[in-house]
Image (tube, rainbow over all chains, first blue to last red; front, side):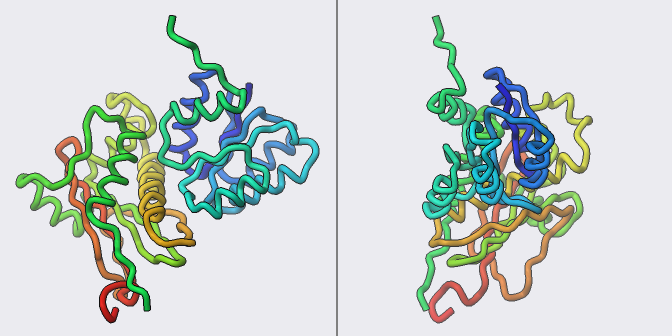
Length: 127
Length: 169
């Protein structure tokens, strides 16, 4: 499994990277939506994109709309991970094609739980 | 004009506590109130270069600037904690790491505070500087929370335009 982590904060990319590495993902990072689109155009088709909303050059919402408009990237699961918590924005992102929406701050468990629901993670049950 | 009730100290503390617990762990909780020992340092926070300040602006139905001020050692601890490094690895952190970590911290705290207020509104990208970030003269502080973490004073404050709150404001 491969995750593309899109956030203008290196710190946040590092936090998300640690969480998904723990459940077996390889990762690629992008600092904004445009950089992420460039990664996709270069041929990477990740299973999962974790996407911030507010970023310079291209925001996460625009990235979602661009990805959803392109058949090549239909298979990718898109999860917004953002501080934007207004109901209208959540609805807008989901309507544009995001599969899930996580509001910062989050716990690692919250991210893994969402990925489990999306069929992208299986948590080991203690014996 | 409709008067907006600004966030209370308790609101802001709850937001900060949740952010700290999520990203910096619960071993060393961030506590409300500056100790007597640190009060003078809190006063100095606004003035000297031994402090880092991160700020973010909210625009829309509610307008404000949210600021977090921390002394240099706390800024280092925040950076190491958010990056998931061992404290012994602190020396590997550079200035970019520190400004990025503080910027993300104020972004998340700002988002939390914004969620308590009337919308719709939008967050700016964060701004981080050594020393104080001085807001324009038409802003005034409506809430300031003095906190202590690892023995260091941390201040979270909210400035709003003078016309958006208060009787006859």
